[in-house]
Length: 449
Figure 1 (tube, rainbow, N blue to C red):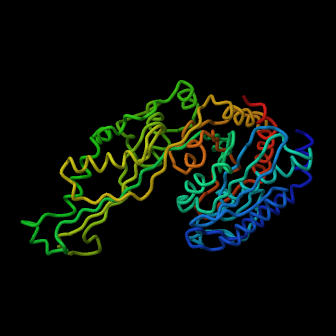
Figure 2 (figure 1 turned 30 degrees about the vertical axis):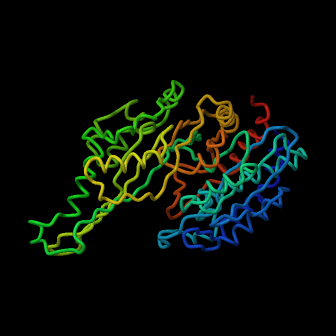
């Protein structure tokens, strides 16, 4: 690998310039700011390393796709996204969010951690390998979408329509970070999500609250419905909700035991006397990572402004999210939720599906996962923090596990990368070490069974 790392060293400024180019180009999917320009820029960067690059249209923003052939039979894919979050609040940035700035070895720009730094690191790893060796030992595919920050609404359709393009023996997912002590983190999966909106209606107009004596309240009706969903021990009461939950393996529990989680500090930070059910230790971690949830995101009804308004609301709405674990199916659970509410006497409440993503994971002892973990030891010189499952959600299943492709997420962020917040950043040392880590994976991938 030394010859390839020497190329990285010689081209440090080139790779940094690629990062500057990409980060100074706004690409805010939620506002359609700079999306077409960024897709063209990413396509040019791909072509510049010798990839066959093209934009593949979707019903939204295009997927930028590239391939580089290798000498071996195996195929490694890289998934990233070129869209970013809006930069507001602008007054809290120490420099312009789309004017990349380096201060004391830290690179600041909107999207550099989520996800442009990782995208460029992967281009750089392939570029350095090709310059040093002339060819890759494996086939490489780049799948760069433009809608991750708005929920990846068209990625599943893209994958289904282009199964030949996404087919791979393993996928390095979008991002990764290190903990506060600098230990690189490796993520082997993420929770799914079922997001719904419930709407209760009674009268056809808001009324003076004197009518509350004889006219039913939409707010109370919705609250009674919500009260049927969970018991006082936080257990979801929808029949069949837990039937498909896959319990953690022995390897998962071992990884959980080494997962840093200062529960006392976090509890005090949040101003809590205790976590749910008074859980601590291994039981707390297992519930956090491997148990599904039913969460009320928000409730809206009637008048909540300043002063008095004696009103009987005719409508009440709430948003719920269910974080799901392997092997729960969000569409199956949506039907179970509808059935259950009807059986409890709430068939009149409208249940609207807003989002559904399957949980996704790669087994802790999978050879691909172990390769990425070995790479951390080799390049960073320490044991990684391995998360069998992270509590957040994303479209990994739609691109990978649905088609039998193992996926592992690792990247160049840090514990204070400030994703989605002002002063988003990565450390340049992490950027170059991340390139080296990817080179290690490229070098060893063809040896996997």
